[in-house]
Length: 101
View 1 (cartoon, rainbow, N blue to C red):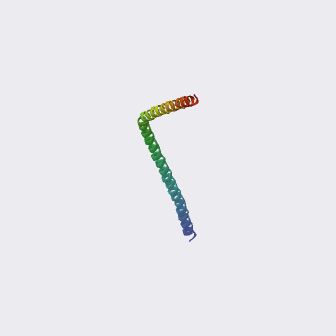
View 2 (view 1 turned 60 degrees about the vertical axis):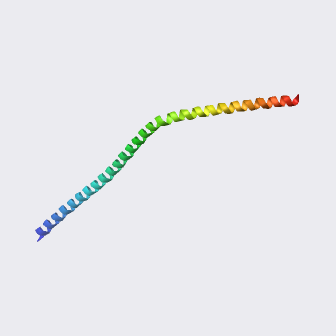
View 3 (view 1 turned 180 degrees about the horizontal axis):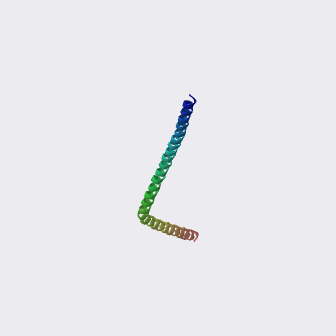
């Protein structure tokens, strides 16, 4: 009878040990899957950033000439405004001189 109890206890110890090993394996598996999902997400973000960088690089070749054209237009308009202001000032000076005479 005592021998049967000892055998039963040994079986239960083995079951508990196996249960603990199984639990650890499941936890390790879940941790692996979680970490793998995080790595996959980071890889996706990395690819997305790389694609955006390429798009910006391509867009930069399109934007640069447009930027230059707009800068030239700006300079032209500023020159026109400057000439207009100078011309208007000269007319005002001439008119004030003629009115004083």
